Length: 199
Picture 1 (cartoon, rainbow, N blue to C red):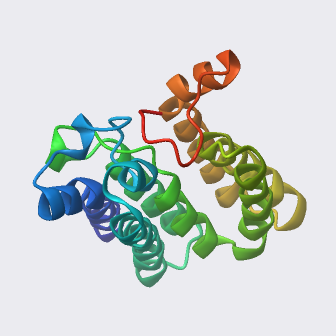
Picture 2: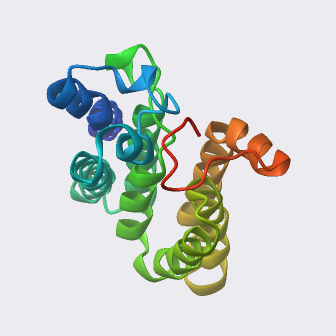
């Protein structure tokens, strides 16, 4: 039990390393949360710093999720611990203790978590999300679609109670963190990919 708690705490602390904030500080000496949309994530990094830093943030944020899930697998044969470690990593990304609990929206880290937990359902959801982004240029819409479709895909193609419960919680995380984006999408004022103003 103690090892399980340690794994969850470690996953949170690693998730709380906000690479968008770190890289923006290192590359340009700025706090990314004071520029663009104010979000500490790959999309805002793309708008503010360009493709190279954004790609680095995207990959590193995904890696946090992958690490957390593998840590859970390494310490337990239960399906629950990898799911809980993944949730902890995303919670860390969204509400990072290292950065006054003001982080990103967790989608890249969610990709790492759910793809590691259940690859094919995540792939199906990801393809639809990418198509939505390509067609509409709304990253937030694709992100929300991915978050909503993953638990549906889990239920349809790879049913597992821990995975279903975990991905439902992740979907709630995503929708909570995208509240302002949802309002802007409904109002038709959401920024499209390639536009450098705040999302």
